[in-house]
Amino acid sequence: MPTPNDELAAELAQLKGALKPAEVAELLEVHPATVYRLIASGQLETVQVGSGTKRRTGLKVPQSSVVSYLRGARVTPTLPTTHVEEVA
Image (cartoon, rainbow, N blue to C red; front, side):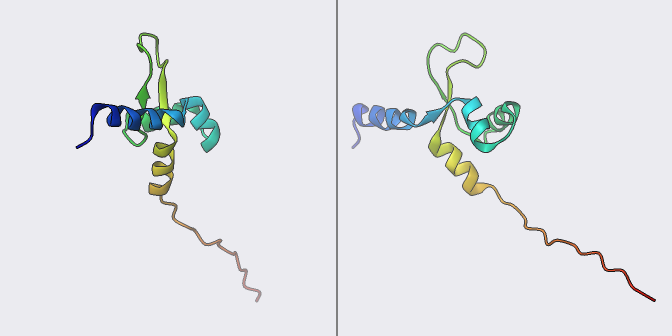
């Protein structure tokens, strides 16, 4: 049976690799607003650090959440289309 200290240790381990939303945006090469939309939609999990009384301060994204998001992202490959002209 896990003890409260075990649960706390697991939470702290998640925080160790946490990133600011702006850092996630830089890593994914997207606008920070995109990261906040992913957070709002539940596609990226976050951890609140501190009181959170200021707008968006103390919000951290565990690296594991970014990895999970990327693993779940699906890209449909598209074949390049070639334009062939018929010569009469």
